[in-house]
Image (tube, rainbow, N blue to C red; front, side):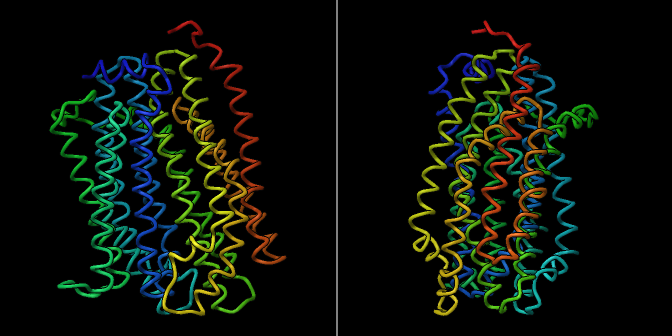
Length: 465
């Protein structure tokens, strides 16, 4: 089974291979997008202030996800490269080490969730109701995050071996559980108590735990290209170093997104406008950030399917197949993001309608500020597709630092200062910072790629088939 799984990444025709590896992951990421959106849709129906609270909580929740996914990306990259080089012992050790690191990450966010949730929400609002809602939601999703931590790790381990179906089923299980229990626990349907925002948090972590149980059961019961055993296991400093050579940049790269969201929320909160207008802009940006995941997540799923192929063929020194995987995936990413651009340009009213509440005035204000928000930010989608694929290439070959530099420049060094300057004109102008930042990051990524092409890639074999 090990040879079959790995040989296909080195020999199977590229387009069928890429689709077989990516489509399950793309579907899995769409399912994961439901985690981001379902809570917001139901809490928006429960109360506009509940939506504001969840939107304010999301950046710190993103940090926990960043640690889970970033560490797992490092493990995924190391396993794929070691399998490509036929070093099965180190691949097995990397997988076992990844699960231990997942537990360590959960303990960290258990402490953060129990001690800092209220302080974080209080940085962005003086509304006592929003503060209460946000603190309760955030403390639960952080302190009970072990399902998300270990679930993500298990998925990335299997994806590194070429198994994309089981991670998809794990994501599907968690999403279905979340969707079922969200309305039951938020609104108190049937025998369930009405818990409001707390109910949304409980439904989220319960879904994550169920997904984790699926992936870990398969990981330990079935045979795979990697074999995980803790008999005689000891942490190896070099393995941890190799994991975090890619993992730390991936963590920082994703965590930067949470800093960016918090920064945008802070810029909005500083505006000299009425409190209800501030809440409307926060809700509009929160809705955008959740909904854009339905466009970006399939591209990230494409990355998950493409990265093991690139990493394997890089490890096998097969430059032709490495380039082929990158080029085909880039075309697919451009198609996906073009569809998203058209949707956000021509149907923003319909999309925002999913976040309607019983408060007609709040709904009208959300549409007034949300429509220009969606249309302006979506100008960045095409540039983002190319930037994401450059980052995926860099991570797959162990050059995660390049990806981190791109994200740092795009979301902090460029986006936030430009957003602040444009907000001095008006809050609607602020959204043009997004396409400006994406163009700058894309230029940077192209420069990194050309450097690798002239140096590191030049040393790979051109004639390997």
